[in-house]
Image 1 (cartoon, rainbow, N blue to C red):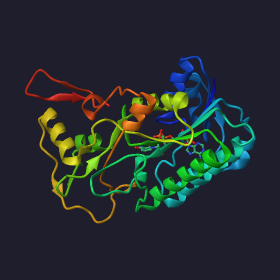
Image 2 (image 1 turned 90 degrees about the vertical axis):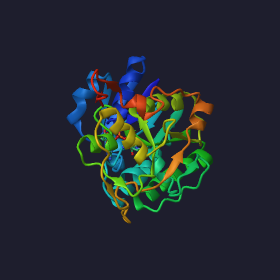
Image 3 (image 1 turned 120 degrees about the vertical axis):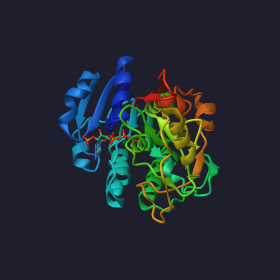
Length: 298
Ligand SMILES: NC(=O)c1ccc[n+]([C@@H]2O[C@H](COP(=O)([O-])OP(=O)(O)OC[C@H]3O[C@@H](n4cnc5c(N)ncnc54)[C@H](OP(=O)(O)O)[C@@H]3O)[C@@H](O)[C@H]2O)c1
């Protein structure tokens, strides 16, 4: 297959490397040539364009069998989200409209679920987040799903949970740096997924994802903040982080929601089997010989 990966960062780069290793012809689109060498050594042909600038896309041939759209605003506020996610999606769809791919997979976020009551949510649950950035993600999904419905564009949405993996992991890093805090009673549920499982789920969606459908990509064990720290403290023989009152302001970009996200549809429809079914495997913990201490690698 001729594959384009829009956004060759933490997720896009290893995905591209894996697809190239399988013999696909892989192109990686991003704004800066700084990572050209990294892409080439992964077997990915660099393509320079900015999805917020349609004139830069127009210079690039738009003929691909598979397209994965996993560009990220890398934080930023509502306006950055609007530009990169919403306007970026509109520009990409317009660019591909004359020569649509066989499959187009977009990485959205479980941040679109605004639930705060700890309930179980699936792909049919309401997406009414309170936070402005998450509202933009909802709108972006709608643009793609409307194209799938009205123009038979082969778009599939993957809603990714909090990503961790080599070099990345918000909660673990906070804990290891001594900066972690238990908010309130620590009952807020965290939904996470290892990067390698995102790479696996993206491939499953490219092959078997149904256009117009949404699949959550989250591991088997959403865990409370308290439960995660308790497990880390037990493994490492270190104290629990201190407790602080719950902040009325959402402390993080995608909002302080509280829900358990289901991965049932991903497993049932796409037959996806997780490499890291829970954070316990994913955080790669090996007990030391002495005193229950442990080594954690990311
Ligand atoms: N982090 C999380 O926990 C989380 C949770 C849910 C969903 N997601 C989603 O997962 C996806 C992958 O995230 P990631 O962590 O792999 O992101 P990342 O490491 O920040 O990589 C983003 C890539 O997008 C490119 N990019 C950014 N703006 C662009 C633009 N205007 N035009 C073209 N390329 C652009 C960047 O390259 P240049 O800077 O060179 O352009 C970079 O290669 C994103 O869609 C993100 O929203 C992340």
